[in-house]
Length: 221
Length: 253
Ligand SMILES: Nc1ncnc2c1ncn2[C@@H]1O[C@H](COP(=O)(O)OP(=O)(O)OP(=O)(O)O)[C@@H](O)[C@H]1O
Ligand SMILES: [Mg+2]
Image (cartoon, rainbow over all chains, first blue to last red):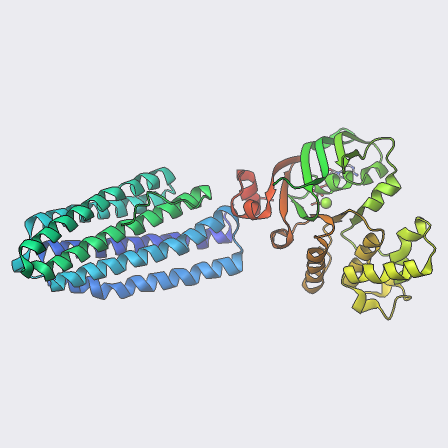
């Protein structure tokens, strides 16, 4: 039986996925911009943020309407709440993409370090992979996949520590590197936080499926 | 901490002639609070509710097996006095059913049957019960007018006062607000919330929002079976059975 609420929740799901893909595109572009020192791309990421914020606001409005008018319960209620919460995680992810893009505008070409660039690239790939898979897990309400994705976040945490170590030693030996060092650390920090938001989304997938509020692989730095 | 149980039922089967209307119900109720019974039409909610004060005894050709206990006492034991039982386990019906006499006489009905003659005691019970039923202010100047002259919502609350007047332990309510407008329903709900600290209220309702608003526990019946029972918070957010989720979300029923 097709219920009225089914159509409405379906529309929420679609908008959530659309928003997810846009966030992924932003993050991809920001990471690419770091790699290639692409200032134009970085500016595009910053400008695109408004559209993503618009999705979040619209999803908030729609979920509030469903809660008020349709009184969802059980599975419907959990899914509605999850979309509301996970969309704000997506929005925060996009904010990190913006911050990364802003760092690109600050990083100076002459002070870049190959090793750090490589580690940041690796971290970026890991985060993007997590994000693609989390959108898949979300679409299929696959809680097992969600848990696996969350587990990948430890990789980011390890890379972050390595980047930090290398940056600090470079700053020590080459004090002029300090400003770039800080930018690098910030980029790595934004990527690390991005992994945490993806982990949050994984938790909402588990909640939708199982009704359990869980803390997945929490090892915040 | 395990709450004290006031009613326990074990493997309750009920047959109307050949038809098995309850297929082995195991269900306990903690003392006090509001307990909702929900489920699609014909699933056996009213039948089960009537088992709890032996109202089914009044129907021909009914066979009941299993055990129902009130405060550890078997209510189907031959020693059980059904008049006494129905005082301890009172019932409120879907349609307000005031007797065709004054509001006052309606409320003291059970006490008169029990032989209470003390005028002061009767007056006191009338006032307290009507206050508990949140209808005192509506009727205090008209106590000797016919109860039939009241609105449906007022009649229902007078009927609840009639049950309360005999100081029951358990109040069974079978869709008590389905014939009432939203304002009167709301008054009955508010009243139940004030009663729940002293009484055990077991309510059958088709209004899911009513069940979720006021009840502490919810039990879901389907086809003569108890599918799931638990704290209302859990049942409405995270039911363990798919049938419960489907019913609550309006996928059937
Ligand atoms: N007096 C009776 N004689 C024969 N069958 C009955 C009698 N009362 C109820 N039944 C049958 O028993 C089953 C359960 O009925 P019951 O009235 O308990 O359902 P219910 O859950 O209260 O439904 P509703 O929500 O419509 O009030 C139904 O199939 C009904 O037809
Ligand atoms: Mg009924």
